[in-house]
Amino acid sequence: MPKKIYTIEDYQQAGLEIYDKLHIATFPVAMKYIKDLSEIPEGVVRPIDKGQKMSICQAMAQARRWGHKLCITEADNFCTPSSVFHGWVQDVSAEELIESQVKQEWHKDAEAEKSETSGMNLQNLKTMMGMGYIGVIITPLHETPVIPDSITVYGNGLHMTYIIHALNYERKKKYAVTSNFIGFGESCGKGAFQPFVMRKPQFVLPGTGDRSFCLIDDHEMAMGLPANHVFYVLENLFNSGDRQGLKLPLRKILPRLNEKITPGFMYMREVIEKAKEKSKGGSN
Amino acid sequence: MSEKYSIEDYQRAGRELYDKLHLVSYPVAIRYIKNLNEVPEGVEKPSDKGQQMSICQAYTQSRRWGEKWVITQEDNFCTPSTITHGWVPVSSEDFIESQVRQQWQKNLAAEKQRAAKDYEENLKRAMAQEFIGVISAPLQDTPVIPHSVLIMGSGIQMTYIIHALSFEKKKEYEVKSNFIGFGETCQKGAFSPYLSNKPQFVLPGTGDRSFCGIQDWEVGMGLPAEAVFYTLENLLETGKGRGLKFPLRQVIPRLNERITPGFIFMRDIINKSLKKEKESS
Figure 1 (spheres, rainbow over the protein chains, first blue to last red):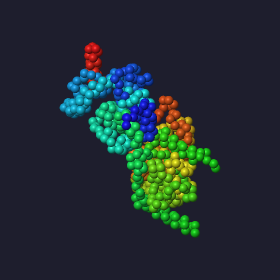
Figure 2: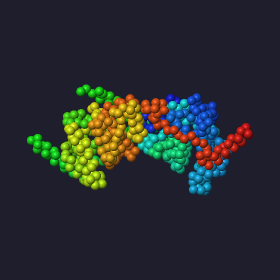
Figure 3: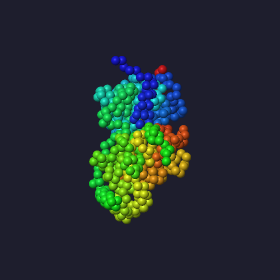
Figure 4: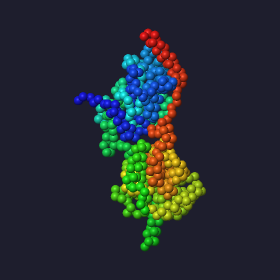
C-alpha cells in the first residue's frame, strides 16, 4: 500500500484535533528544519529582523502559547550551543564544543563533560553538520504554513499517558517510546530534532532552557513526534482498554466508605438515627 | 414559576464551559430536593446498591465518570454534611459534639467557636429549607434545572472565570470567600452559592482530599446555576486583545548570549567560523 501523503491542511486539522480532544493548555508545535532562508514562508518572523534574539525553546513557547510563527537560525539564537548541536554552523571542533559546555559548569568537571559531550553527541554533531540545515520554522500546528518535520505536544503527565497509550496500541516497534534524560536540550533536541532525525517519538521532561527562559510550568512535560505520527496518535487516542481504559475526563475509582471511618461521623449517625426514630414516633 | 433557562440551555452551557476552558472534568449540576419523587429516571441512589457515598464523592463521580447520583442522609457516610445541609434537624450540642470527636480544631473552645457560629448562621437556615437530599449530574447531561454549578479546574481556569464574573464589576457576581479547609465542594462549591446566590472560590477541603482522589493543583468555583450563562457571556473578554487568553500567553524574557559564559564563548566560535566560511567563498 502506498504511504499516505498528508497535506498542510491535514496537519492543521490534526493540530486542532489534538488540542481539542486532549484538552491541552497550549497548541501543539510544528517544527520544520530549513536549508535556506528562501524556504521561510510569508508571515513567519525572524527575531533578528526586529533586533532581538530568541532561543529555540523560547520560540516553541511563543508558538504554543501566543500562536506566533517564528524562524530561528544561528543569528537569531542566543543559545549558541544549540545552534551547534543542530549543525547550523560548520567547522566547530569537538574541543570547542566541549569547552563551551565546560564553561557552563553543567557537570562536575571537564572529565564528566568530555564523557557527556564526546559520546553520542559528537557522533550526532557530525551527522547534523552533514545535513546542511541552517534553521528551524516553529509554528502552532493548527496554523502551520509548511509540512512539519516533527511535532511537539506539551501537556501534563496524564496527557502524555494518553499519547503513549495511543502510540503503543498496536505495539508497533516504530512507535515505541524510549528516551534518555540528561536535563538539557529537552524541547529543542529531544522534543523536535531527534524525533525528526531518528523517526522515533521522544518523551520530554523539560530541561534547563525550558525552565530558565520559557516560564514553563512545573507540571508540564511533552512528547516529541516525527510529524506524521500525529495521525497515528489521533487514530488510536483513547482506544486503549476500550470502555474500561483511561478516558477524558480521567475516571478514577473512589474508595467505598461508610461512617466507621471517623468517630464524629459515627456519633452523628447515631444522632441521626435517634432523630429519625423520634420524628417517626412524633408522627404516629 | 417558569425558569429563565431550559435544561437544554444548561446542558449546552456545560459543554461550552468544558470545551472552551479545556477543563479536565465536567462542570457539575447540583439540585437540592425536598422529596424523592423529584429524582428523575437514570439518577441512582448509592444505598439502593447497598453502598454509601459522601456528597463530594458523588460530585467527583459526576465530573469524572459522567454519573448521576442522588445523595440523602441514608446514602451519605459523611454524616456532619447531612446535618450542615439541613436534611436532619439536630441540636447545636449534638452538632458540636460530632465535630469535637473529629478533633479538627485545637480544643473544645475552638470547636465551639467554629461549630456554634456555623450552627447559628448556617445550619438553622439550611434546616429551614427542608431539603432531604441533592442530585448531582454532569452539567452537559443534567436531567434537572440545577440550583448551583461546581466547576473544578486549575488556578488559571479559575482566573478566567473570575475575570468573566468581574467583567462588569457587578456586585451580584463578586467572588468573596472564606476558607476553613472543610466542606469546600459540598458546602462552599454548591450549597452556599445556591443559598447566598453568590459565587464561591473553592480550595478543596478534607473530604475532597481524603475520599475523592482530587489532584493537589485542583481548585474550583461554585456558582449559582444561572451565573454560568453570565460567565460564558464574558469569558476571555477581559482586556480584549491583550488580556489573558487561552492558551495563556506568558511574556517570556528577551535575552541574548551574555546570559552565560558558554553561550558567549560559542558565539565567538560561531562568528569566527562564519567569517572563515565567508572569506573562503
